[in-house]
Amino acid sequence: MAGEDVSERLDGLTSWHADWRGLRVAVLGLSVTGFSVADTLAELGSDVHVFTESADEEYARLLPVIGAGLWTGSLSTVPESLSAFAPEVVVASPGFAPSHPVIEWARASGIALWGDIELAWRVRDKVPAANGAPAEWILVTGTNGKTTTTRLAATMLVAGGLRAAPVGNIGTPVLDAVRDPSGFDALVVELSSHQLWYLGLQAGTSKVSPHASVCLNLADDHLEWHGSAEAYRDAKAHVYDSTRVACVYNKSDEATRRMVEDADVIDGARAIGFDLGVPGPSDLGLVDGILVDRAFLEDRRTSALEITTLAELAEQGLGAPHVVANILAASALARSLDVPPTAIREALRGFRLDPHRIEVVAVEGGITWVDDSKATNPHAASSSLTAFPGAIWIVGGQLKGVDVSDLVSGRGAASKAAIVIGVERSAVVEAFARHAPGVPVFEVEDTETEDVMARVVELAIGIARDGDVVLLAPAAASFDQFASYADRGRRFSDAVRERLGRGIDDGNDVGSDGPQVDLG
Image (cartoon, rainbow, N blue to C red):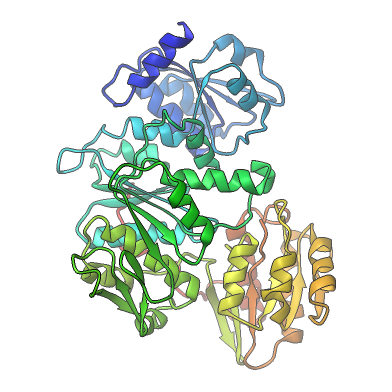
């Protein structure tokens, strides 16, 4: 099929009920996202072939069952099988960076290059909501706080009587939700910068047009994937493309305000700000310890609607400043879909943070042990250090091309001590030597994974005194020594409890979910 004919056909594929039969699609990667893409397109009747360097045994077994082909091998160059297949569309899993040889080949060849989000939007009408329309989409991104805000917003929507679910980068592929036979009124879609980069490739042709969107904050991250801070920022900004109702932004983060100002949105979309200050009209913020909405009410010039109080949030372990900011952002998203403030308050009463997000592991002998293993970049670690100033800080891992100097010279300089772990310890130790020489620094030398956290806890016990906080906020990825940030956090918690004589199962329940819809 000629290039112009392919483009015309793809432009018309905007419904589950369109004719997707015979469309040649190469799917790159066979993770949970890649399989959801292959499964969806196979169900639609497309000619689907998956190309991956390695395949999960279960997914590999299922592909021929659903009618999709599978090729495994090195993708350091473009496989002959891929070029011979001559795909009309390539759908890439988010792990494939812009510099990947296959991605460069697809772009140079003029082949349509999508991510799973573009495909999911085009087929989102498979199971309409109760009103007969496809589910509304709310998009959430940011360097930090995405998962918490996504869960918060979905929980608030459910409390407001909507059938809603958190999906996307949070763990459940959007395509699985789109095909759920019970249908949804709204989907809260967490998007990584990788997924947004793929959306940006279709700028001007992408069909995605969310009801509301937010970029929570921006700080350097994933620079090794994007190639530069500017490219990372540009990818994040695509969250606001074609937003129809509410572009929610962080008033305390100038970059997010500029994103909204520069965004190509649908006429009538409003800019809704949030921060921890007194809100102006069209903002959410704080007044005398009360979280208020001055955006979604008629008399917003002179009035505000109460959502909840700082005191109530603190009682539930939700009082850290960055968590309060996430709550305000999620409230703005929920209010854009007319969820009453009373329902938002009720949702918050049952909400708990994810495990490994400022999770108190133990308090004994006046020492508080906190697991924030999910702080995988400097921006997130800065929020943790703000919540626990003067902590004994456990830091280090894979830095992902990001310089930690500003973090060390800023929040890190107030630490009582630093315990440095991970393969890139030297960069962290040198940052302390240059920018915070008064902070005692202890290194955990190359150690087997099983022993890292035992050594960390041993060092911390030798330093900590009554009233101290020992804070795991690594500011780095975990894959140098651990399976994931969750594995890192579990091992820290286990080591703490074992040393304190509690056993590894004596945790709290801060990771339990609030009211959400189970996708099954």
